[in-house]
Image 1 (spheres, rainbow, N blue to C red):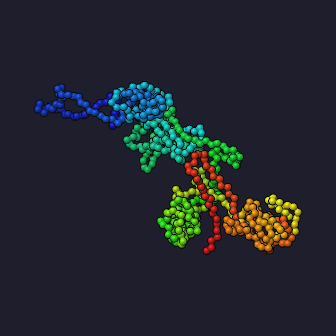
Image 2: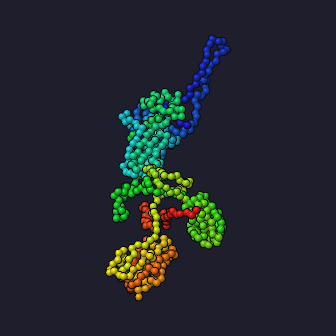
Image 3: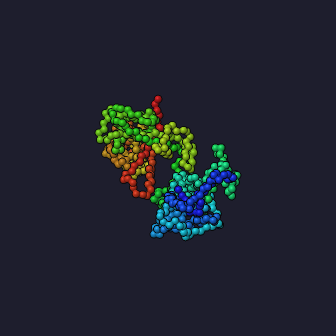
Length: 540
């Protein structure tokens, strides 16, 4: 309940009495006896107090100029909101109500009870020269703006204070305010209006407004509407936002020239014509761990699957077999937990790879073909692919040299020798599994039949003899680094002679650079995975 502190008539009643010439017995009279009491008292509990501080005047109040006293409380105005008993030491007070700059009406929702209710106006400034507005446009002095950090506060003439906040997309949408911000440019554009239905009851009042025009009306769902302006005091508009600031890095520290990089250092990773990969990673918790049992995942045509226990320890890969086409895996017949802690889980991933057709600035990416899986938002990511192409191990730069001078060059030095290795008939054999990126030399010793096997980065890994095939084993894969056939060695080898060649591995050089912004660490350890995709020939 609320009441206005204005002169009001407490009660009005109407009674129609028809007077005619009748006998005296038909005359009725109503009167109040002077002997009885004509006063009564009724206690009223109000949940708000309302005043009009511009009663009799049609002037606009300037924001921040209202100050009055009610009882022992002093109220001040802050952009349409009233606070009482502001502490000068910290500038804080109690939120107590609102003021309408256009009508002068004050509504208090909080005050000290059982005190004098006489309002004493201490400060008030009005004007007729500053017209109200219903649109605000401005640009922030610093950019870019952090998403969801913009807050705009305005004081309206009829609806009090409006506090507006932009969402992650920069959109501001309320019943009275419509617009948004471009976080990259810092430009803010706001319109203030209320979508109002025009009815027979309110049409006359709306058409009487000085801003009304019939062109402003529009039809929607068979009804007539108009955008009723919400007038704002221009001096009351203020905003708050958080902007990013970036420190340019030295090119020597960064490892590349930052001249053409954007201010925030970010570069696009998706371009039209590139290869993109959509992937979804999910977890499947196993109900048990029975040896030889087959478990079916929730998805088929998966690209990756591995098992781990409740502590994140990976189950050895030789203890289960994965059917990637049908999304199943089977535990080996001799499966045992050993040190693993149940329950076990299967972490799996399915993917779609395609050619990027279009990239929009809002982050939307279009592929040239439809995806073949359902990708839930919470489990899926889109990544760019580094296309490596076909890879095959091979050897290059074979030559012989008179002496080994411990200098790794790809051309022979010193005088020519008569001895030679015949790789035309007996080429050096390499395999994708065993070959590494290395420069090798076989240095003859003794009588010219034995030799040392030396790699530029591996050092001496063994010895051999020209009368037997040379097959040094790669300890990582268990396959030979290379095979030099005994039939290829000709005659004339002497101590100190060397056979030089290079092996090229079926690998691709990748620099994995991960950037972490300056902050306190949230955890001690961190990790990431690099996933390799390969095309294979299926046997039907």
